[in-house]
Image (cartoon, rainbow, N blue to C red):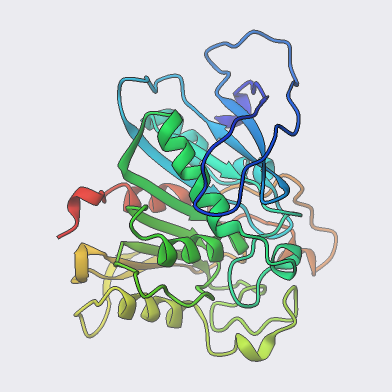
Length: 331
C-alpha cells in the first residue's frame, strides 16, 4: 500500500511553455531528503513560477515506467482546503499507478483552492487565478519530459478539484481522452470548441456539502441562488446533452447494495456518460479518510473527510471507466 512507500521528495525547477501566462525564474531548489533513490522512491515535488505565483505539483513516476515506452497520465486534482499531499494520500490513484504502470500528477491549488468557474472557489476564484492554463501547461510540459501517451491523458479530482476537472474537459477536450471525478458539478460554461469526451461523476447520496439533490449549500460559497438548480442528476443530464447522447433514458450499468452506476452509451465520439451514486457516502467518496480526519462533533461528519463507510473502491471504478478510452477511439 502507498503508506508503505518510502517517499523521496526533490523540488525540481524548470521552464516550460504554457498556453498563456509566463513561467519565470527559478523560485528555489532543494533536496528534502539525502537518502539515495531506491525502488520505492517514486514521488517528486516540483515548483515553478507561473503568472507571478509559485505553483507546485507532486509527480508519481512508478519504477516500472521506462523512458522508451509511452504510458497513460492521470492528473488528479485536490479539493478546496486540501493540497496535493493530502489528496495523494486519500485517493487511490497512486496504488493503481504502481500496479498498472502509469504516471500521476497532483497539481497544488493556489491557497488550497481552484478557480473552477463562475462562483468557485476560495482565494483562487476571488483573485481570478489562471488555473486553467496552469494545468494545461503542466500537462504539455509532462508530454515533453515524460513518456506520456498523448492518446491516454485522463483527469480526475475531488470537490473543487472535480469542478476544475470538468472546466478543463470543456475547455481543452482536444487534450484529454476521458475524465472521472468526485462530488462536484460543472459551473463553467462549455467552450464552443468542446468536442465530446467520456465523463463520469461519483457522488455520495448523503453529501451535505455539495448536495446530491442540489448544490444550494451554506458554505463555502454563499451563492445559494446560483446553485439551486444543479445536482448530481442534473449534472449527469447536462453531460448527456453536451455529449449528444441519443438515449432517451439512462441504462443501469451496475446495481449493488451500496451503490449504482447509470449511464448513457450512445453518444457522439463514443463519449459515454456515467453517474455513480454511493448510497451511504457523504462528501468524501473515497475508500480512505482524509489524513486529518477526525470526528469530534456532528458538523465533522460533513467536513471531516470521512470515507465512504462501505469501503467502495471508487477510484478503481473511475480508473476502470476512464482507462477504457483513448483518443484513438474517437469515431
